[in-house]
Image 1 (cartoon, rainbow, N blue to C red):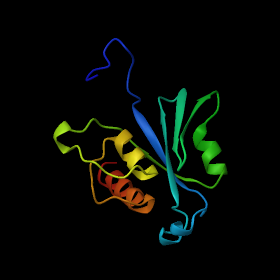
Image 2 (cartoon, helix red, strand yellow):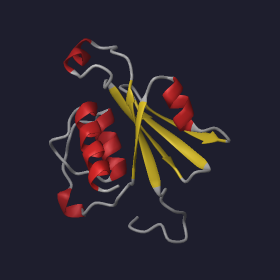
Image 3 (cartoon, rainbow, N blue to C red):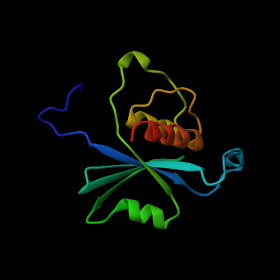
Image 4 (cartoon, rainbow, N blue to C red):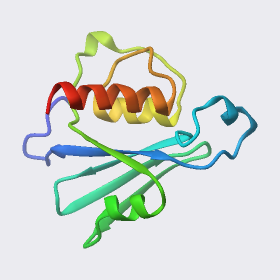
Length: 131
């Protein structure tokens, strides 16, 4: 479906949460404190937490609770960004990871972003250049 006109709307902004625990042996290659990433989409009143895990993707709907507060209390680092709709010509096939899931929801087509820390740096620089 190309358009959502008449069906709903896209959330105007998002928070990407970075953190997590080292639970697998191969996670030792990731930067400490950046083992996992998740996405919070919202409009200020309604929030959806999209948490892509190894064995399933968890969707949690928040009402009357600030998910940013909950995630900060759990030790996650948050960065605010705006989702975009990318061109269809840049579609590429990549492994299904938490980073790739967040990138797809945000419309990021950078094939050199593989780890949560790389995604954090990309979003941080984007935020600094577009205040």
